[in-house]
Image (tube, rainbow, N blue to C red; front, side):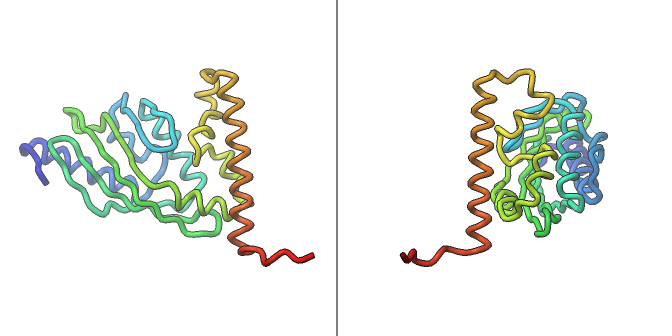
Length: 198
């Protein structure tokens, strides 16, 4: 595992176990004891945020959208107090099964708590499932979960920092995304049209 010493070894193994336990029965505050007060959170589609309350908010939205969400740690490695964890998330998005592979890089502080979390994943499987289910779009929109960075600019904690031009661009991109998703959903359900005949 590349651990530097026994103190790191103990801290890392405890953090991985707590991280895995949280995903076994996830809820917004499942990781509170594992996070430093001012934990830095970096992940695709979301603004960088700070604080354990921010993680609880984000995971609360995610669990609202995918109520049966579960996670399983498939492997992990560590270098000192930096841990890389591969996680498989499963659940049901609308009527379809969702599978997301995520890589989390966790940096632990001297107390063994996470002071920085950087997540990487490919959001396309979730976006494709959303595109195929127009009936889910309203629920997705109100949940506050991605899939666009611009979508997140409408959340209350960000509204006061948005210049008017950025808001207009965000609205335009949101409309474009919904139109493209509607076309993709129609194409996937009906297939390509036949030749046009007069």
